Length: 501
Image (cartoon, rainbow, N blue to C red; front, side):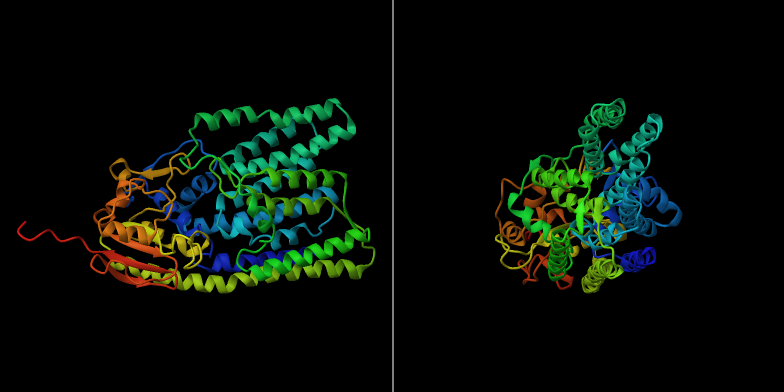
């Protein structure tokens, strides 16, 4: 079993390690930000961006990768952070099952099945790394359940401190899991000194964390709470973001197998597992889509629950054949999920090469605007927000010291900001429509847009358009310099001064 798990884990890491740019939506953006941070104080610093450090709950890679990158290179350090997060997640799930049930069972395989779900495919690297720490933290807490309070308090304080700066949602998953376990012990064992002491230990560091978050101004302009109730059922079906058929087959097989085994009395949660299952279900229903600075907060909960809950299952499969069959099914699903990434990665590699080739045709230190080509009702093609190509233009920050409108550099969220003299270029992360930009190019003005958008032809040097390829909307102002299947790059032609001036 351990050998099978290790082999599948190694197979899942082949593409992330071998690919220059893993096919994750946000990966290129994270990589560009790491380059900015690593060169901030050097002679080759990007001229458009400066530092803006604070106590933000989303800083795991910002603290780890730039110092490491000075030793092994930024590319290698970013890739090492990605791989470390994946390994922590898979082994952390297996560790919880080993500590709780004293078995090396299915939790690791289930984790591998979910390792291409939306939070992973979107490249939420800080969350994935912090989730791995949270899973190992849960395993460590359960292992020390009968040890002295001082040891448990010390472990808890260290984990809370790490998760507070790693990712706030991962901290919530860690605290929620331990809180439910403690509540179940209190319910069954009564208000003993040990049970009450456990709650005191869990609560001890939280006021300090809350105070630091409030004092640290760790809130961007995109804060707030938003629920997307209609999407919750659909999100459960997305076990693999790279292939909907693989997702549907995986959900169908797991649902059928779970139903049959439960009906025959061969599969059930233990008492603590039932509390956790109900708790996670209620939390998922109540969890908003946007929570403070984190989008897809409810979606991030799904793989976490899937990796924690199998440790609390009780299996009654006395014969060897059913156990082998179950493991074989999970292994096959994990392998299918890994293989589903291959065609997406190949397509992404081609798109990346097309984009990188355009940078040689840009002026020094270019200012780049990124837009989308979909019609307002998105009828002309897929929403570019969920495509890995969305952030490829940001690599110009790394390669030609560019300013790019969609670089992750939000105040209160990332530790970099546009320098004051370039703050007016910041147009936010939302992609403007090429139709809107074309209308502006023909004289229209929109009061709801930033000034940089209304003057984009004179403000920026290049335009990268994501989505279905369409004809050049402004042939007199835009010169195509390259394209891929879902992206077109234009050099902006400066407007000529009127004759006689």
